[in-house]
Image (cartoon, rainbow, N blue to C red; front, side, top):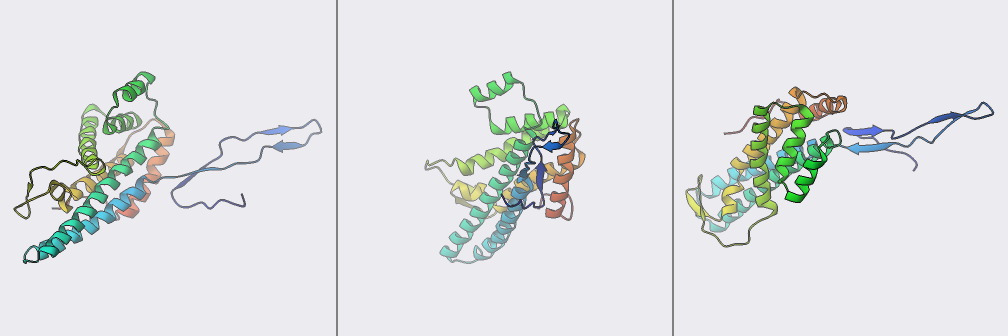
Length: 241
């Protein structure tokens, strides 16, 4: 390989290296091999924010056309907001999956627990919450809040990636005061904002205030916080009204 291009947010490691002194007094060593890893957790949060911006713009457009009588324009506006909102929510959940995959490398899950997860097909949010709890030594109250928030986020994600094919009664859209297919009610800008900004806020809190006994996790916290601050230069995201 002629060379390696190292980008911002990429971790570089040398998995193994040794030197030896030969009988003739010369020092020799193994070829140095670099291993790299790019952290996609903040990447997915950035994508979630981008899709959320699109969803909020689509909501504004939806409000405009729903003041009129053009049925095709109304349908197009609803679909655009729905698509952007769904992508935003999915991206936020993937960001937490990415965080989980990194922390899992530094957290010891008892074999009995891992086997119970596998056999019982334990929900993803439960596994993520437990891994984060162990990585950052969360107190019971904080762990319970994290678990509850992750459960809601993953439930929304699951509705997107595992959609029901059943025909069901319409739901009342609280902003339009009209019955719509459930997807247009669940996947709208306001709900997307709650999920995405909540997910980003929790990441901020862990990156800035999380307490860990693992030096590698502590090092990761610092790099994660820097990238989150680049995505959200105004600080910890707040839930938009």
